[in-house]
Amino acid sequence: MEVKVLNNADLSNNPVIAQMSLYNHEQIVFCNDNATGLKAIIAIHNTILGPSLGGTRMWNYNNEMEALNDVLRLSRGMTYKSSVAGLNLGGGKAVIIGDPKKIKNEALLRRFGKFVNSLGGKYITAEDVAMTSRDMEIIHMETDHVSGLPENMGGSGDPSPVTAYGVYVSMKASAKEVWGSDSLSGKKVLVQGIGHVGEVLVSHLTKEGAKVYINDISEERLKAVADAHKAEVVSADKMFDLDIDVYAPCALGATVNDATLAKLKCKIICGAANNQLANEVVHGEAVGKQGILYAPDYVVNAGGIINVYYELEGYNRERAMRHAEGIYNTTFNLFQLAKKDSIPTYMAANRLGEQRLASIAAINAVL
Ligand code: NAD
Image 1 (cartoon, helix red, strand yellow):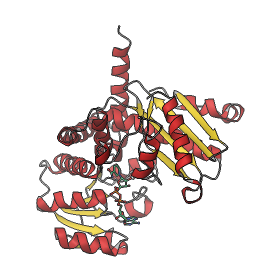
Image 2 (cartoon, rainbow, N blue to C red):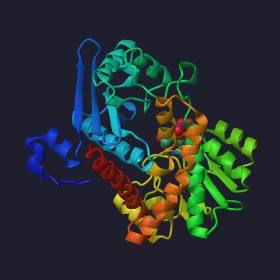
Image 3 (cartoon, rainbow, N blue to C red):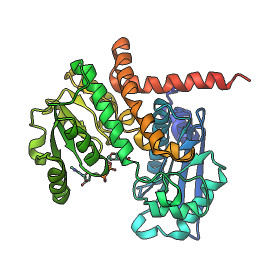
Image 4 (cartoon, rainbow, N blue to C red):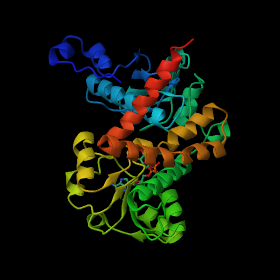
């Protein structure tokens, strides 16, 4: 993928299209409706592999440029995620500007649904920050181009078990790379965040005989998961001092940063959270220098998008799980690419995504 670097003059003279051309975004739709107060941006980054798919995020952005930057960055991320996961999906994303507590209502969501519908399937939406499955049902009243619907509406339901399975196999592939065997038996794993994904991951790990430490801000979750899976609770101020083999971030982004890297003693970072590296370039390099193998987040947590993809095909959880199992090979292959090209693992993941895009673009050009 060619990346053009623009200078400040380019950006200030022509901020929107110049920003689109920076990472070759195909289309942006600005949506406005005075009656409902809807202000939204739908960004379609790339449709070489298929229709663009990505969630709708609602956020009270400080200004429109902040919203634009976010939607451009997130939609591009979806192109890479689906490409590396081997899905026939492109990258897209939408943001609705405003405080969900104040302005989100049925009319606004349905108006947004009409905008999604106007794209005729070129963009398929899903749940993201501050959107619920009920919101998706409302959007679905106006468009069929919605994914991640509840099971009782013919959808794929909660993707977390598929995501957790993908994280688990990715961790095994990482173990194979580091220790020559993919067994996690006896390995010490810290799972930070034991919500929908984290708990299922803990269950896979303890079943295999790993020693699992858990941390969460919810005392209730900690008690429930510790009791159910015989995991050991560790406090936030102690967890990065533990002598562990694997750190699995499954709560928030940016937990791989200067402060945590100064303490972390693990050999592998592999978890479900998005955007784990506080700064991709800085911390993506730093992990390797510290002898830690970083399994890139968007490769590891692709189970969610894989699950949604099979909803579009007529949902079958077995097929989704089988596809998620492939994350093992994808993870292992990208480690080999990183070694061969002497590049950090995050960069190897991006390269894999770009290679698939380029190869499919080439066959698309053949009649
Ligand atoms: P969740 O909301 O069910 O669970 C998150 C857990 O993290 C909660 O138990 C919460 O109490 C805990 N938490 C929040 N802040 C914390 C903190 N500062 N320290 C420790 N724990 C904290 O979310 P989830 O669906 O399990 O997803 C986990 C992560 O994986 C998120 O970052 C999500 O974006 C990402 N992800 C999830 C899926 C999926 O299928 N659910 C797919 C891809 C990526």
